[in-house]
Structures are given as structure tokens and as C-alpha cells.
Length: 314
Image 1 (cartoon, helix red, strand yellow):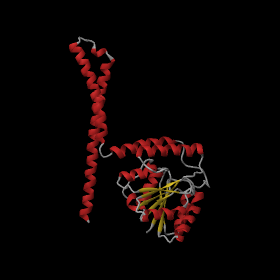
Image 2 (spheres, helix red, strand yellow):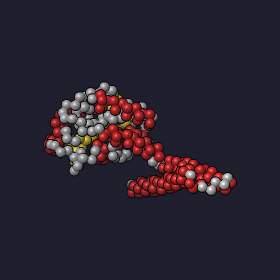
Image 3 (cartoon, one colour):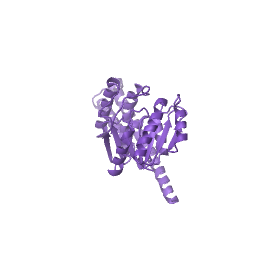
Image 4 (cartoon, helix red, strand yellow):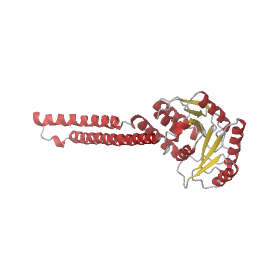
């Protein structure tokens, strides 16, 4: 199979029929073998009924339904599990992503041997204040923090090699950072393509203002996990040692004053409690890193055991 198209949706009954027809026209005109994987993220309208109708008419359609709204990341993760195409393409269901971009994305993956091609909505039709400006700030921060060349991390229109989506896990609100997660997993051939962005035709956006807070919290999480996920002791151990050493220097200074400078009221000085607190916090940070290292190493050993087990079974 050439292409799997994964489409998460939430309350988009007006656009699904039109989107489906558009995708089929593009696929058939380019003679692709394909499948469409619709993932209903707990819709409360008639979206699922539309998908059921479409699935009864087209054997190329697979449909997954969540009992409640879990978020786009969970929907993509389940769609990736079901995908079977050589190239996996993700797109939003609100008709703002154009299916006409599919052949170009597919060709970039197959002809240039890329792992990921990320869409870049160079010209947007969203609200400048609530979408464009925050998106530019977010993408600028992501580029600086991760040393990435991608201009539009938020774009839902992306293409992946099948091997990529089968070796990553997306959770929380991490769908924005799939290229970063994939690069940390060893898939470094990443490029971008300028894509057409269209005005929303039906309904309103399903993302609220809380996406800004979640986006930046996830930014910090991904930064930590990609840098220290396999070596947590390097972070907690170094920080803990620094804090403990600071407290130890303070305690040594106060002890010297007590024994050699006759400063009998050492415990009445605020500096004494600051030094004591620093040593306690430093020791706790060091132990946190030690425990995290044990958990990380145990997880890697279990994973390696499972890999060896699968190889032996083969």
C-alpha cells in the first residue's frame, strides 16, 4: 500500500463528507493504493454517523472511535498503530489542509528518502492575534530550543515513513513535537514543504486559549526528555551536587567561625539555615537522579529483553 492518511476529528460532521470526496479524487487521479483512517476523538455531534456511512461505501476506510475526548495526540497514536501504508500522512479534518498536497509530500518521502516532511503554512488565514502571532512566537522558541529548521511545528499536514510512526509514541499534547520526538529516536532526515492553508469553511476551532499554556509546558517536557531521558543522573546529579556543595561551603564557613573566631550564636544566623536547606535539597536532587537512573536502566533492559525475545522467536 502506498499511503495511509490518518485523520483525527472532533465534532466536524459538516466537513467530513467533502473532505473524504476530495481525498478520493486526489488518490484516484494519481493512482495511489491507499487507506483512510478516521479517528473520532469523542465527538458529540453526528460525525461518527457520517464516518460509518462513508465506511460502508468505501473499503479503503478504517474508523476508530474513542468513548470520550482524549486529545489529538491520542488520536494520532491510535491511527499510527493501525496504519499500513509505505507513507503515512496526517491532516486535519476541517478542510484547512488541502489533500492536493498529498502527492507532493509522498514524492518527497519516496524520492528523497526522507523520514519526515512537515508542512509549512507560510500564508495563514487564521486570526492574527489569537493564532498567527502566538504560532510565530511558539515556532521561533522551538527552533531556538531544539535547533530545528522547521518553520511551522503546529502544522497538522505531515508525511512520515511507516517505520517512523511505528517507533514513536505520542501522548499528552505532544503531537506538535512529533519531528522532535522522531529525531530523538534516530530519524534525522527531516525536511519541510510549503503547503496551502485554507480558510475554515465550517464551524469553529476546537482548540482554546489553554493550548498556549499546554504548548509551552510540553515544550519544556520534550526538551528535558530528549536531552536527559536516557541519562537523568546528568541533570539531577549535577544540579544536586552544585546545590549540596553550596550548602557545604556555607556550613564549613560557619563551623570555622564557631571554632576559630568564637562565634557562639551560629544557629541564630539566617545563613546557617540557608546552608542546611541547600545540603538537604542537594542530597534529595542527587537521590532523585540516582533513582531515575535505576528506573531508566531497568526500562532499557526490559526493552532489550523483549527485542532479543522477538528475534529469537523469528
